[in-house]
Length: 309
Image (cartoon, rainbow, N blue to C red; front, side, top):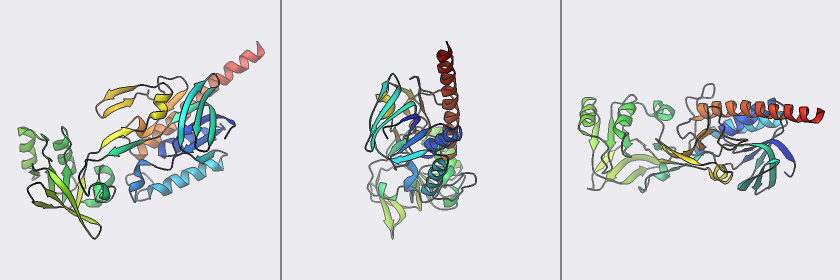
């Protein structure tokens, strides 16, 4: 751990491992610091991942770690405690020791902050889900509740209507749909329930409905929620990156290759792109890995020229 690496990858999810795979195949010395808490660890299976549809997400990551190690990369189970820049590059302090790298890629993901409704968190990843493209097909033709979270909720209900004719928009006491949106919802048979949700109900471990403030129970099989995405970007900000406002909240900005405003530091995956699913995160990681390798090539050229001067 006290050795110097070409690249330190902070985060062992799909984005970080994809970047590491590109880099080890480019014969770079790479260490991956894996906190072992991927965002999708609550889901039993992944969907819409080409070639891996239905595979548990933990199995995908295990395969990725094995591939990286087969090329000489190192994956370390470690929690990051701090990071700083030096003249040589970056120093990352972890629960397993200090790591020094010429470049750093941060792929630490995000955490989903769910509405504070009793029973909701207990069903997260099973009866309560977020992405219709990840889980919509599996709950097709079932009774679906869409838990509103402000503007855009009506459009989300219309999207989810693609998978079932039994959709209920639970506004949860918010202004989730204006007059025109309500007309569109009614036209497609989407029920609108305005009372606040006070509890998510389960039976035998399965979600069975939502209890409203007036005591009414809406029978449901699944609830699509819209959690607030909170980036795990402490390392990025410690190293000098700044958040900027976006449609999904405040996130660190990167260019199309994942480079931040801090020279030598890249970021990929949900830590900077909250809507990135597994395939998108993998692509972003691969792109960042290639960009980092080329940046190191340019530095190697400069060093070689300086040595001959």
